[in-house]
Image (cartoon, rainbow, N blue to C red):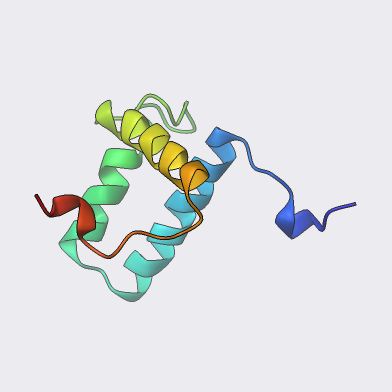
Length: 84
């Protein structure tokens, strides 16, 4: 039986885990880019569906990230998606 820390996450659980992770960074380093990212990821309604945020593209970006993670175990180079 897998360890609880290694059990698969649903997309919604993984989304919340990512939010918590970024929020921890923001608490240590309160810079604008982290605040903007967290704001764009926050559900429109308090405690609401993480798939309905102030930035609708966030969920689609999340799905693209999941597909990329499943396609390769390698992490991208930092900023590699910005290179043409």
